[in-house]
Length: 540
Length: 72
Ligand SMILES: Cc1cc2nc3c(=O)[nH]c(=O)nc-3n(C[C@H](O)[C@H](O)[C@H](O)COP(=O)(O)OP(=O)(O)OC[C@H]3O[C@@H](n4cnc5c(N)ncnc54)[C@H](O)[C@@H]3O)c2cc1C
Image (cartoon, rainbow over all chains, first blue to last red; front, side, top):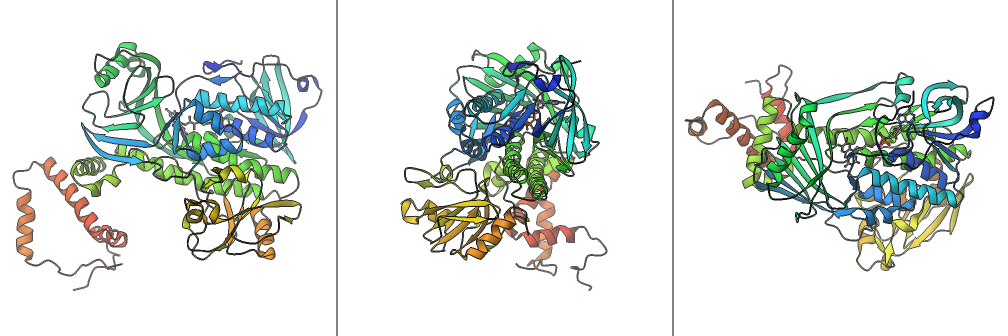
């Protein structure tokens, strides 16, 4: 039976019978996305904007309510900007850059995530996940109105999958009964419990952390600053660690570490949640609880993100602890990495093996995220007496000595992965070039003509030249690569030169459609560029 | 990188040893453990060199295969 597993915040795609359901044999779609969470919707939007027909099947009729992600990282905003909804997110969210860490009642550490000027987007915004998803769906609606071939089918639950020669058959359950959908390619964005992964019998191994956290989102008028505050052993006895973080509309996220062996039902009782909150806020501040839940977590990933014609993205492929906000943010990077590759393969512009690089690059990214989030989790919830001993030693020392502060780990916040060693990377032939824009890196933003660089790159391959000659467009086997000609002089702040030239006097960058650097040189050489374009599209 | 020093390097070894033990005087087992952890972190930061620190971690294991130990 079709039953909601969660309450809806926005009923955006009510069930409608599709003509596909009345046809005798399954209708074939180039791309079917299973799951309309933030990752599935980002992938759908990206593919649709590229003109690739895409069908989203989601088992609910809209966006789920409830507190999950709140921290949206700069890279997600930049990707959203490329997809036309970066501004909408920033307008809706709360901008923050500053984090403070306390041990008992003393501040031991402070970090500013973006001390650098010259970026269009801030290091982070906070926005409740349902609003993030709403912005994506609104953007999809606008794109559809402009002709983007995206279709969303609500209350279409995928219950079975069969791999066929050259395609995939999905068994779908609807309120009108079952039907089958055929697909050339399937992107499985069906979340951590991924029925697709289970149906295909694929492994999902990793570590379970033995601790639980209680989330209380409260609405209150409070003049706490817009910064992330984290306490180890807080002076108020609400948990062994605690987090306070601002969200839009006067809502604050409170998050308490409450231990592994807890009685969930009891902990979630109104009076018990209120006791923890009031311990923290004091008795005077009036507040209203808008959400409460208990979560536990695991750090794990699939061995391979590609299984023939099924590609896994987001929580279905990897799961991390929330410390570091690497869940949804990394899933959006999966979508960003996958969309252009799938488009090229579908259009016959690249061999199917290009999709293997989706798997290898994003598995690499997932390992980095799991490493960071595991380390943060080990610090926050030490798993042995010795681990706790050193954790406490770091905290005690950090109150007095600066050296210990960088060891304090309350979560290393999400930054995009640099695909070092990727098979798609071409030469790094820019002597003196900055490390941060080496092949594999996401392009750093820079101010430009009153605007910003990333907004000028778009979502296709690009040849970026800085004080270097090159033809206006290069073409390799049907792939057209337009040039963006810049001069370091265009940015008086020097950021462009600093981020792309380093000690070099000129530079030629080949950029991928996901705005990662594919290769770079000091000057233009046609053969080298053509070879790099072939390499970046999986033709070696 | 500087190699990990595993030959005598402390002036007045007996004095140092006495000072180390004395620092634990009057501490409970728990306080001593915490003290040791803080001390390790302070010394590690002073050394700084990542390779030397890794070599020290390996040396402290006293494993048989350890080749850094000097024979005499
Ligand atoms: C407490 C908490 C705090 C977090 N904080 C952050 C944060 O600050 N920043 C961050 O980046 N991440 C955070 N995360 C992680 C983030 O919530 C997830 O990484 C994110 O939701 C993953 O998105 P997704 O699209 O992959 O999966 P999901 O959001 O789980 O979406 C999966 C979708 O697939 C649908 N579906 C499932 N099965 C089927 C089926 N059989 N057929 C059709 N549809 C199906 C589901 O209904 C759902 O719509 C947090 C998580 C938690 C629990």
